[in-house]
Length: 255
Image (cartoon, rainbow, N blue to C red; front, side, top):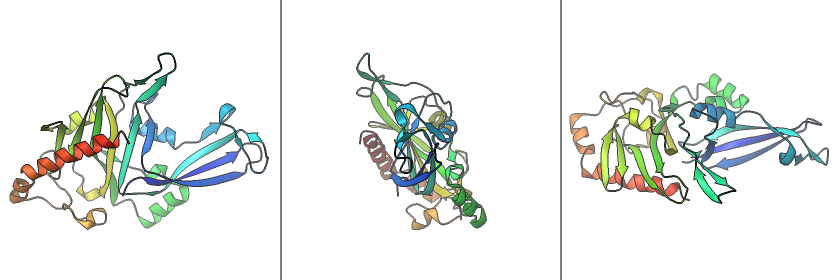
């Protein structure tokens, strides 16, 4: 349900030997600096990286430490992606972990196709695998404070009724999507894979997938909620579940 299978490709700059290693990443850690958008940060994370100086590695062919290049590709993604923005850096002088207050924008919908292995990208195009799906922002954990060991945490959550709510301790209030996307203290982003036909960027005309349905990640048929449905999902039970999810999200940022 969580994370992605990524492929690390290292290439020796001396003999051109490539080594490939796969690893399952439960969460993605993305640098905030020096980027202004999440897309820029992700593009940099999945671009070729030159490894030299302290990052030299022993080539199995050259038998010595050599400069090399490294590329990371996604080869399999799960229904839910957690992205943690690296907002904290350790200051050797003060011996404290300080917060980076750089504002980085993040989209409501996220296309992961450019970050897949090239062969998988071609397969995606040929088989039309991803054209019916996208990743949509479902929750944002916000950290208020100057250091890693102090401050306050609350969560923005897209509830089952399609609207956004701010869950802040005992208070749960409805907010606009614009406010969610403009928070400069966003710390953890949760994206959920959904049928692309169900995405509607509005707070008035809702088209959402069925609740608690196993076909959430396979069906592309949108469902318009009825008045009775809206009355049900706006009751106390829904608010309580939203409130509980906020604490789960807040807990995840510390484990």
